[in-house]
Image (tube, rainbow, N blue to C red; front, side, top):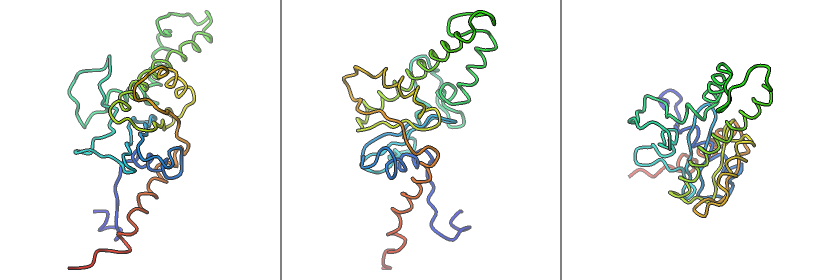
Length: 216
């Protein structure tokens, strides 16, 4: 339909897959042919690059890690019309909702505190526990991807994924693992990653556009 409107070749691709390609083209995964890009921000997802190409899977669901079943998550059947459960925990809106609930209840972790009893210190402590909890979830995702794919690199992207505190927490929780985990780094392109990925993808199709197959 878009081709009919604009009159030229149109390529449709997932934004997180594009961000993975962008990091390979201009960012932190240059020259890597096998890596995974985990984006955590408004949504959660992964772009998986194998042999230099995005891996979509048989039904194009490769990388939909928001639907992963991890310890303490629901066992209900997955549906495409609902968000994955991890998106209620790891996304910016999920973290904000969790923090507001703690503030509303005057509860930080397993502790109760009054407004006058070291609330600032309690908030800092609660913040650290929240980061540690979410770092553990991301570390589990990283380890699972590494055991299945054994990529050379795992990149964390998105407004939350690229945050230094989360990256440090994930790296700390993966220390000592003897299986699969190689490097875990943060993406460097930010919001521009998907744009650069779109450029890279378009360039791959240039020969096909300029040199169409000869008619039979």
